[in-house]
Image (cartoon, rainbow, N blue to C red):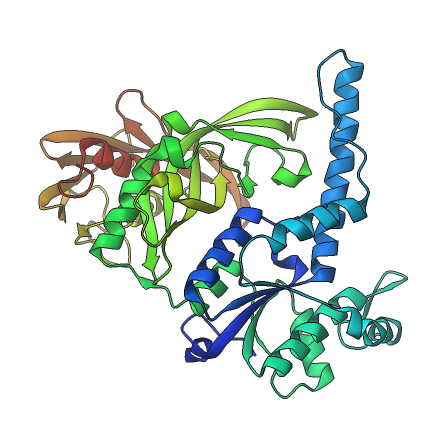
Length: 459
């Protein structure tokens, strides 16, 4: 059955079982390590990873290893130094990964699938359970083996377990097998951990801890790995497609903190940053030759876990980091741009007065309107003005300092209508300061507020 993170059924879960498709290809060892640490601290929850799942991850890693050897050979042929990583078989890589996973913690159990090999092959051949065709090839034996093994393990221990799987094959398999007690199934490893370990919105001390860690961007983002990227103007490759991404951690600007939660094992949160990211291997739509580019003011969404008892960014674990490149003029209407600024303000800890539903006044943006919010006991005043040259002008006053934003017509696009295709304007936001910038400018006020400082929180 499918449950959401608020379901009371998760209180009885005693194991989290992982499908191979939890990760796009190879496993994120930092995510698994964080999960294992939380399970060890919890004391009553196990992490189940079937041997066939590890083999599949190992095979994907072997493909990466082969590509690395080829790349190193090309570099050496060009007269550059590159170390040969050695000749490893897929079996060798899977064996090393198995040892690494077994060493993650006492709560990790590698589940043996060999007792279910006969049934798994039958499912694949007869196209039963998770068995299916991919073209002319029958597949599903590996999935059948670990799904059957997890179910048998839970029956033997007489416990409830949660299966983390990114597709619908697991649910279909248990339904076809007629299991009376199928597992709860979730697609997200992060949501599964929150559900099982009973994460709740953090108290003030937890928010302060998260904020202090998030503000140390140079430490938190040093050598961070980007797990997913939307490059916008370039072909949308993921890192595993050959891209190398390097964040300029020293110059990253903190602009928001959301989803701060805590449980007896950790404080978790998502920090938002604007940062320059060097991308090696990007292929532009108009130039397919891979090259090196720098994406300015990319928005980073960084999921972080701080173990219980720690108060240092050095102990924080980055679970995932996603990147979105800026797009010039992304708004179809001036009001949409204004509402996104309002939404961005809600990601500032301690802000009072931000309500749901977007900007609270001035339906006619040519009219003057004024909004006052509270942050850290100080007043944040927002004056909205119409302009003959721009869609609107917004002046922010906070602790005696000012910041200005302008909404401007960035160009024209095309849209379908009853009369055919028509041209329509689209809009951007410019942040006036030193220097002037317009990428991801909906966070311009956030950057200004954190730069000035929030009494009691950032000072």
